[in-house]
Image (cartoon, rainbow, N blue to C red; front, side):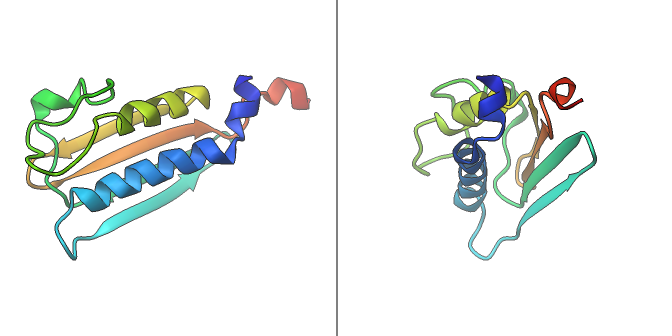
Length: 123
């Protein structure tokens, strides 16, 4: 099952849609959002970088839990489910997600996914 989910474009689309829509939602009008894709033979690295409101340090550890939202979102609507879904999708792909954020400066989400979960099967 993990091997199949690794190549599931629906799950990858879910990750991208959520992170990019969050970057848009929490950025000022006209703000810059950067999407970077890098990698090597073993992994793919995706970064979503925004210049939004940032996430307070004390909220960052719990942000991937269901129904968790940063304390500074104010009236910006949201359920607090998006990042927990992203984390589950990344986990299904055998990957890792990391966040760096500073309030008032912006946020960078870095996702690292293996290119091939079953390399031993290919040999």
